[in-house]
Length: 218
Image (cartoon, rainbow, N blue to C red; front, side):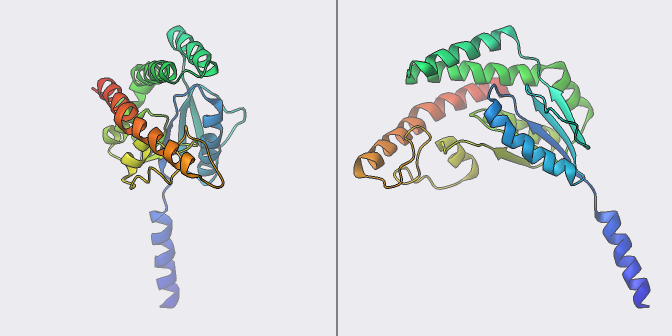
């Protein structure tokens, strides 16, 4: 009787153990933001999950259960990225905001409109979407399309948009903003500077990016 019970439990366990189909969406020009996400995807693939990774950067090795869809970057997006690199070197905050928005959203829109991704959306189904986030919150809309949960992955520091997305209370004076730098011992001046960075983030950057996200999503 005991052996039958063990056999039944074993059969149920085997039948209930199914690999998940996971889609990684990472349309970015940043190789450094892609590497940790590829590492996570490789681990999941090695554990038997069916992984599809969408990115401009290819993984230079063969991994079982790991499929790549390499994005073709248009000449316009490459031009935007060159312009973005230039304004970054000039330390021009307003220029960085304008050009970064154009760069990120053009590439994101190209990704959603590409033949490969449209075919993926029309013919396949996934159990989980992992979005390589860099203010491109509109990509989370893919989870609604596939009717599955989503995970947002960001290897940088905190932005108010991330706090808003996950419903985390915003500690504007305490949590270091991405643009204010990290300090081992925060002085009053640093905490005040951090607060103003968050204020600009909430009042200007978040609303601007939310507007651009809505345009792309619609």
